[in-house]
Length: 410
Image (tube, rainbow, N blue to C red; front, side, top):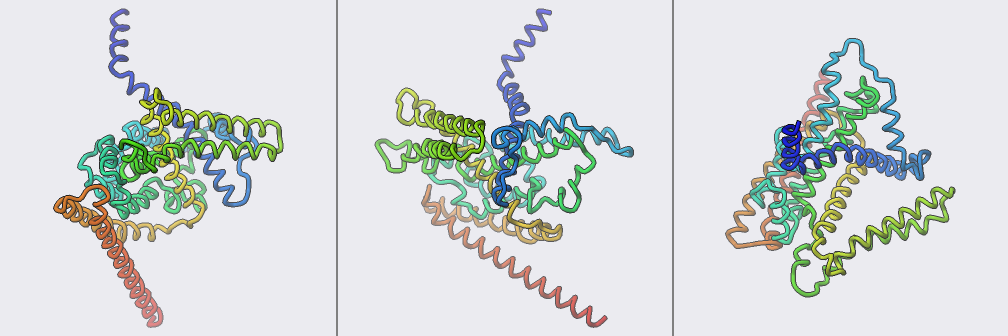
């Protein structure tokens, strides 16, 4: 017994950090996903001039908890002729892949993107050319050292990755596997209860993963805008950005206080005051490393966490915004967009970025100076994109003429 206990303790000493991260991912992520769904429903309702979920809890904030309980106790139905083993494993494998990619600190999913989405893989290659490494910390440090985010040096690669990541996560307007309006619930029609919810957990987990990859490679990771200025001695005007997180949270707190008298019930008024107080406290926590000398060692962790979450949230919000504004593509349109436009554009862009980097090394360009060579590369890539679209349009016109002539000849 003592030997077993000793072996367990030794195991925990070696692997306590990965185990803790795994428990956090499995335990906390479903709750985060539930509230991302609530935010998406609220945004959709706001765009459609309605309130969205409001019944369960103040402002409907307990709706994700109610949804989870409903799905847990809902009748579990298995089709009579289904392969029960595959039926049981399908949702588990789906959500497991998403959780494992997140537990791999996001960048491991780049290998999956290279395997399954050529355009996204080539977009990642364009960004990785600036660093020559897959290490997350090194990629962010390279953007800090150069003093510029890679989205400015490779905007075409970022656009390509953005479109490909939407298709990779099966989000509208590329949600053809789901296609709610045509197929009830797409590939998960036969699933019910908690197994049905696992598919949506996998979808939103993948959204967080692709948003984290985009933030790391293109948007400076946990760096604030003009992060290199913060490390320079003396006072600089751009250092007011250190106060931006606090000002943003104070503005949200003030808005909540202003909205308190307009709430119809006492519980909603108290909730708005609680949110205002929480935002104010978090704002003070973010302000402390900026103004209190003893708290300055915590600046990188506190503000880095804020900026990373903020960027990922904006990326996911863009996903939601597209879902409620753009109609779904047809299958042939999606395939043509990928194979006839995105893949040729991404290949051309990789070549142009490589040439730009060679030119930049020849002229000893660094930081913002790299824009002198990457901007012409981006312009040439855009011209190539317009040329591809023009050729596609001519091809479509010829096909329509051929079809019309065949019709009248018949």
